[in-house]
Length: 441
Image (cartoon, rainbow, N blue to C red; front, side, top):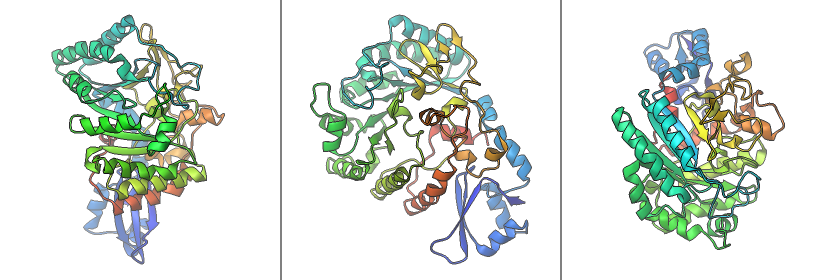
């Protein structure tokens, strides 16, 4: 057996002549004595430990077979998929006035029509539920709860169709958090509400400046009150959007939440990400479009440390691919236009069809499989990168088909992230999408 090519090796910071090995394909971590590592590098016999290291993805029988399995991983994942994910943008209206959301001309008081909603339901039932696939919708906006009546009218027939075909229907909300209180949560849970993402852009004084109501008053108190009132009904994840001059204040937000009784076990995950300019759905996509700027590398490591040291869960390095690459997902805009990523909304040339006409071939326009080249397939970071972010290429003036190489970013951050995981090993299951991709390995 030989060492996996999808492996990072770091010298131990606490034990001389010991090494930390992290499998990017299995997201497993082990420490080995230097003698054992050198034996593995030379193809030597590791004795009874070899089976364990093989199970963890540290050792493989044949690197060429492993490389081919990596090349076909997403193809096999698509073939095994039993769930369709749809991001449905119900409106482009909002009761908040956030500068980074409203700077683009395609925003406005636009709402999905009854006819479009009906066609959406018919399409999802015909193409997915009746085919035996579970369905997860993430309702988005604007502010999706300004269209709560439409959520009801979409969810009722989908829930009935799912029961008829013996599959599952559920939905989540990406909401600013001002309208999801206990009463609205209790109305929506019977329809399939399974989770919600709230946004707080730092401690109160920063958040209220960045995310005020349209009237100009602050929204922080309302959002925190709503989190406190529904955490026991609906799993809540918390996001926040930072700038270079604001990220160091974000840990005070966590302290303010704890002071209000919102302790770590009441939040499923906290993830702070940089504001992504010109993104169609900035809050949804900003976690993907991270660049390698030195300040951002420092900010993400700092914020992750502050989140984990307070006992909150956050994201961990895991096998993940751009949603553009995965067949069983789609973004449906409120006018019925279709996209593969919410960040592409409003960008010319990236609409891939409509609900009425169906999906056109987007392989070339979206650079599908751009990572299937020798450099990427031989890169130890490939399982946690898959060619990076197409949208970030657009922002940098590159072709979407180019690889957004994350080597520099991961060289600068991954070891720190792994050590943080070891220091704060709070049990946290992988995200559902990561678990589904892992199942294809």
